[in-house]
Amino acid sequence: MSKVICIIDDDPIYQFLINKIIGTTDAGHELIFFKNGKEALDYFTLDLKNNLPEIILLDLEMPVMDGWDFLKEIDQLKTDNTSIYIVSSSISHEDKEKARTFSKIKGHYSKPINSNRIKEITQKSE
Image 1 (cartoon, rainbow, N blue to C red):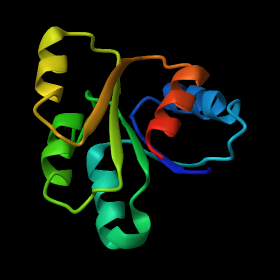
Image 2: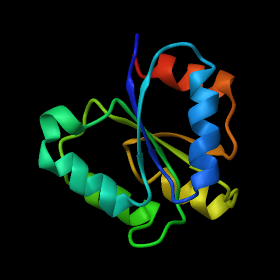
Image 3: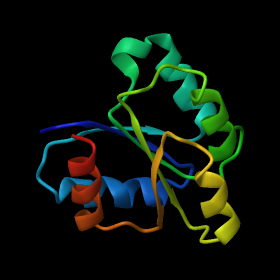
Image 4: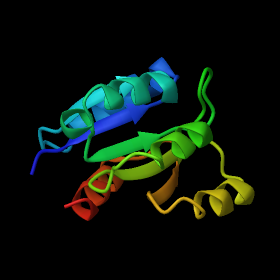
């Protein structure tokens, strides 16, 4: 089943790469991209019912609004049908522990993720 996957990451090379990786899954997922958490929140809050994706792949280190601040803000919204996965180059134990304090986070992965991981994430979110 096709899903809307939101990539929130400020790295254009990573955005290009993840677009290609998700494209290889042949599932026809719709992708939306944002350079930081504020851009994403602004878009989501325009129309929560229609603009929230099923899956968010979230980087932690970004300008303007980082992943942690994004998580604090989105925690205030009704996003029960959205699964959030941290995809970060950070592999620190502290980040993984902090991620566990946010109930909406369904997983924490190191960059880059591969097509098998994408398939796993999309299947979990059904």
